[in-house]
Image 1 (cartoon, rainbow, N blue to C red):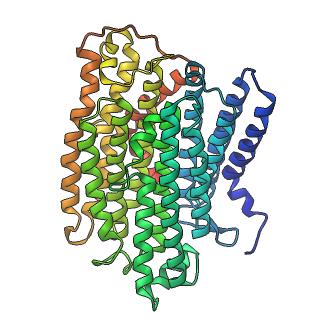
Image 2 (cartoon, helix red, strand yellow):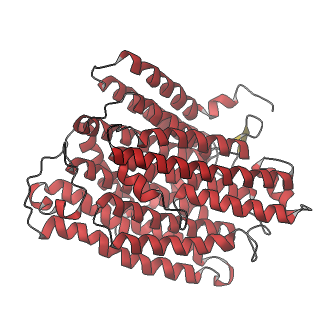
Image 3 (cartoon, one colour):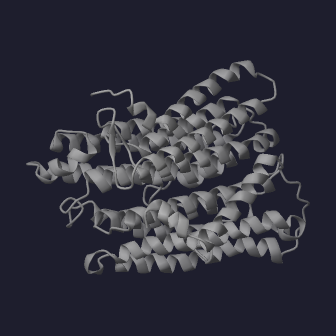
Length: 489
């Protein structure tokens, strides 16, 4: 590997997150039993610095240009910097949401903020990955930190159980990931994603390519909680502290999709590898259809709002897999459509979980639909924010969720000979079905009388996220032009 000192400038967002994250982990030793406001401020400052660095680098790299870094281990391109800015923004929002929730629910652990930034650094590595080695390192850096954050409420038996399930399933998925990468390396003789596409198309061992690509489909299926690899998600989302759940649903899923874009769009893309009965697109389209359908049907039966949003997240993962299938089958607009959807989904998810964190109070998180009865009368602004987020998740115009699904399905329709038409129909039908369980919450907030007083969890940071996310949802939906240009549509 050839190292050029100038390469470090292109990975500034990653360096900022790593350095500040390590500082925060060490700083906890000096804040035992004291106010941790300074730690929160440093976390937000570090995340915002990474965000600004990503924006600056996005403007410096011309459109369509890919600059190899650190001996082709990483790459600098506009897609990577858009995703890096997204992950940094979500990390800052999660930190702002956490202070009040930590205070109310007694899990004031300073190491949490360092782990938050270190997990985000793994996501940035995935956004810029150009090698199977950096894909693996990014996933493990991201995942190990999240395993610990899920168990941060040490007195919560449900949280400890959720962390254990998540850890065991994650370790199982890592095995699939490593075996798949090993087989692809054996077939290609390289771990470089760019070189691998040509090498795999000409390999003398097609069986290794088929087995390796299918194992990667399974491994990434676990990471994005796709059916039938989704069994960990509802329990982990419910047991984790609400800000951690928001971070998992938005950033972790987005980072896994970013890795899939790099692997399936570059290393396993082209005119040969995705196609046919033994191409990776064949199992992926089936998994996408199952994920959308099972996620929606399961969400209908949920009374716990965090579990409902978990199954909703599973369904949205299915929509993203539709976009990845279209990307593999040659749809030119699939990549920017996925990018727009990731931004829209992340903003909406952070907003929804911010309201969930706001509504809960010490000793009572109010996680059931019945607990939200009368919220529209007592806390009208919170109810309005939640309504906007739920309508966006359902894909109702004029929200960004509507445009996100529209562009994903439009890209799928561009695939040659209408191969994904049936998958688009499945997605549209399930989008209509999802409106039912989203409106259950809206109905409870506005049309049912509450019997219990609401004493919400308040903090300036949490309220800021509650206000900013719905406004951004409407702005992206009413004026999508700038965002579409940003992602290349």
